[in-house]
Length: 507
Image 1 (cartoon, rainbow, N blue to C red):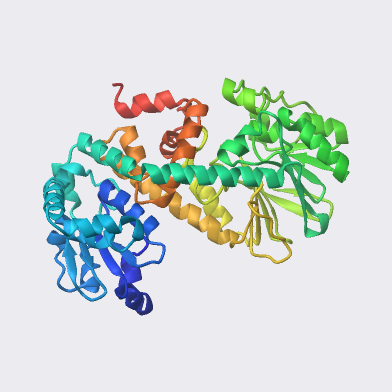
Image 2 (cartoon, helix red, strand yellow):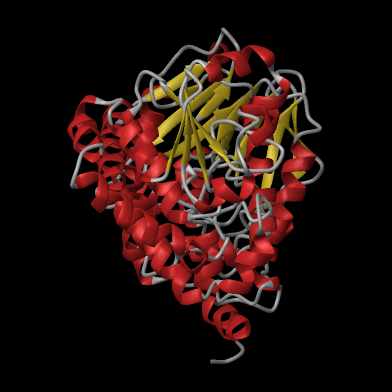
């Protein structure tokens, strides 16, 4: 999570020398307030004049032999490029003087009476540091976790976490505004558009609808239908039908099969309609067929915005291990996790993975209630065994380094698909570790959730406004809480309330 790890500082000579040319800031990685302040420091430091180093016994000798672990845990330490060590409030004032927007604070903070007042305030915080932390910031093994667990109270953790939030609140709001601008820009670029790739073998049709448009505008999740070598994959929801029909009139594709990757409403709502329009047979997995016959009633928010699909009609075909296309075949790969019935499609000749929602970006914090992250981990490990050069997400994003895929801002992401999958695996494994540790400590669900989003982690606060907006508008159906639940979900647990009661012991 931090910019520099033990390996970064201790094992890379070039980076070590570069770090010595900067102000090295030793901070407590298990304190939410410290994490929040470090985020501000990184935001202010546009010229990379500082290096933020979380404290550990292994790192300190590589920074400066004079540093003592107990002293560094007690107060902030800053080592200047000239080798001076500033401690506590003097370290804060030293850093403040580095940036134009805070220079006056630093200048006054080194003079009477402001220096005395600053030292008194800092001493109070330093003296009570263990009562202001629960060691749940993602760094519980950094320094003295047993001492922290023994002395800290859960109420103190919430005070610390909440104060960390308010310290970072301006950054949260600014990140939310920037993200909203990016979402509107991407939506405008993709509105009524399509991408024709691989000499027409792959077409991405961007779908829209009056109410469905609120989703990409508020949350950035685009709606698409993928046409691949004669197969129409995930043809959208009923409220996107007019948009899909417009695309089909323009493209006039030869659709030989209609396929669904899973039974969510934005993927299956037009299966029957498209099959009747084109005369192409429907192909779904056996589990998806069960989910669609009959299709359960959706929560009213989802039914209103996306649309309630009709039951799947006969005749339809069940997917096997492969499905033939116009010029070859696609492997059908079970990928449960996002939901139990999910499958992905892989073209071994073109090395194209049509992932549906089996990927959904390396960072995804507000899943639906039927996500099982333990199964998702296994599915991603299975996908890592494939030779993938182009990864197509079910919501429009394409991950590739191939030069025959043109750039398209907001849609084509220039990265190795295997690297992207690996990053998501790392993220999910870290979450599993945090959640297991939290339950072993007997923390309630909300505290475990907070531990999965420490303020030191940039994604935690950059996505905070969007994540909480999604929680609010979906009435809790999509939320960070569901992310925690997804790691302990059992087959007999169907509703979030069941999970809450089970974890809280019925309180």
